[in-house]
Length: 252
Image (cartoon, rainbow, N blue to C red; front, top):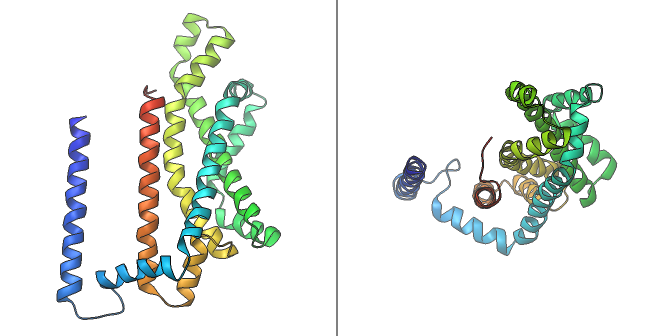
């Protein structure tokens, strides 16, 4: 715990020092340039995002797509975990899970283009793509965790001769920390995927604002939007950590 707090403290100091140096050097020392925007210009751009670009609606849309997809997939896995474990233990059907492991090598941009061709600017297409992206990644992760569980507890299972129900309950409990950790990693990836989808499909989310800013050659607005998105992602990760500490406090 002390080491964790120490790391957070050092990270906070590093960020504070970086912001101070950036503001001092760029605002007062470096001449005006088009490459590194001044902090005062970034602040003006943040205000402009809310005033001129209607950023609140875009934040609501993108955040809804990201978090509704994650929450739906979590509860889907949570309530069907026993059934999925039974399927994963079937050697014939388990080949399907092995196939899903290959999904991480599939370029998501191809899927985005296919969905945009079919759904155009539809928000429902964006929701569906985000949901499928999460569920396929989680099933692939589930398959890896299940295989590791079998390898690690093989001797224990053979010696204790556990019944199928007890074994499934034990698996369901022990794989949750690993599965939840994959949620946190997938959270960041999903933000990037959804923004790229919106950039291409122009559904009205934050990715669409990026498209508009790029068309207007508004570089300071580009940076300002990146800062806002970083804050949203950080807040989401913070909530994930709080929930994990409350609900999933054991480790596999």
